[in-house]
Length: 132
Image (cartoon, rainbow, N blue to C red; front, side, top):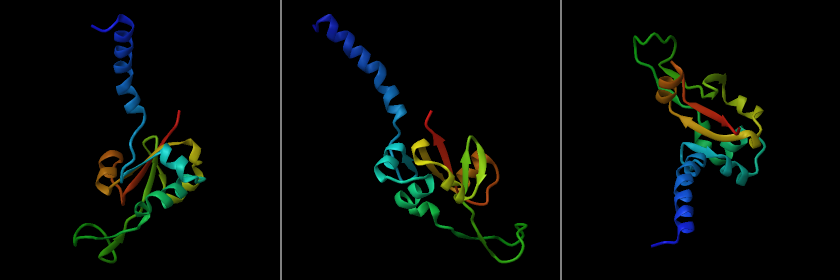
């Protein structure tokens, strides 16, 4: 049997471990973390995305179906939107106004994901979460 102080310490470690895991997200192909940004030594959110996930910035052409209400060509350019606090802040140029040291995460969302969360969208989104 373990001495009582070690048992208390073990219980305390178990109690805070899940919280620590939630506070520190892991980077992935759709997520840039504050740690990633610090290691990259960039000035703003745009530079972080450009350096760490340049694929997020590629503008795509999508085919529009006849009768979909679209006018003009059969190809439409997708526009990448930036979302902060559940609001659309505009295109990727807005990322240049966000200092890197204020960012907790940058998350890429497909057009479908952005549309489901924020309403109809003409392209994918980058969701910015700030440090508190």
